[in-house]
Image 1 (cartoon, rainbow, N blue to C red):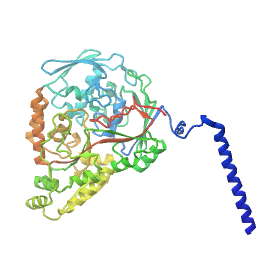
Image 2 (image 1 turned 90 degrees about the vertical axis):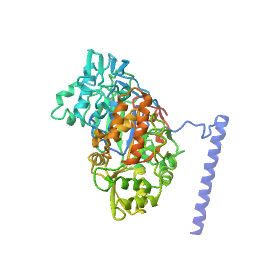
Image 3 (image 1 turned 180 degrees about the vertical axis):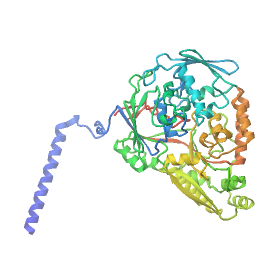
Image 4 (image 1 turned 30 degrees about the horizontal axis):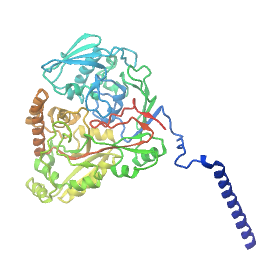
Length: 541
């Protein structure tokens, strides 16, 4: 047995030497023309297809009606299925022509005349006309949900004059300074008037929940809820032809799974809200993966339902605001990739108030306020978060630990995104954790939705906040063309809200997203990270 073992060792050694010599011979034959590993062409990934774009998100879409949904997950899709009068391009926050190739504004800021492109058609081949513009805005007001908030008290059914098929005049009931900017939002998508055939009793909401009547660069191919939504390039698109023939919105529940899929090349881009800063930092330097960074207007915040219960007492809300260790939160959850924010207007936007009151971490002050409110012990509250969001789950855990130090028990409840959205818009929550990015770069957008009494619930005033002074300041700022007056109003609103504390503003994070290095042309817009320009993105190995 020992001799046999020695024989096998000798044979193994000779085979190994032979392989080494063959390797040396090959290298010698290649001579000076040999390539080092760094010089060789990169291996082709078997998952690469330059006509198909695979996007991963962990949040399904509640519905597809652009006038009835306030969900950013809906907007990401409807931005591609529909066109608007104006749009935002790349990282710009200035509206650019889209269906309206140009427009004129009267000196008093009340009359807007839009000249439409003449070759735009809806997906059924019918032309996009001035009638479609009037129909779309009128329907938004008739539906009376999220989209109506933009146009509330600004236009009505009598505001439209169709001059010809491709010219329309819109007369505002009063000046509305950000009007042009609002027309680039998902709420201002232009719908085919043939939707009337499916109006039913709800202006077509039931029909549009899972269908589309747009003119955009993509059409809806299929939607398997919870699995995948597929968009196909519109072959007859009137504008620049979309670069991707197919866009797959893949619903991947676990961030770890999406990360693995990206690293294998099965996914091209991951929803920027899906992966925590900690995981993104771990992915830095991964072969074939790029971390896209940008500054932005995103706000992470905590709405408190102040209509009833303990949170209806401002002292309780102020106590909670004093209970949070903000520095620890920014460091441990955001890894320094965020900064503290004072209110609903992000730093960098017109109207931002750097002097609004900040609540410092002060446990003694918090306990004293709870005692004054008669809630010194035994207070139990619930915080609702959407599932599969590491930042929100980590934030909730930190808040739970902080509030425990002042005698408040905070129970964490996790919901699927559609259920979570229904919960917070119907006022069934104590706390929620939400992210917000403005669709147009004006404080009117954030503050009208956060603070105006008409926006309660489905209008995204998730605190169900009502303050007559704030309502008045918002309405005055909306109707003024005096930028100085508008700025003063918005700053005052932030001061009032800082005292009322309907929301706790957690952080203004930097924008980060993980993509394959072969993805070209993807840019994070500071005001609307949910706008992914699938129609302009290319893939190059």
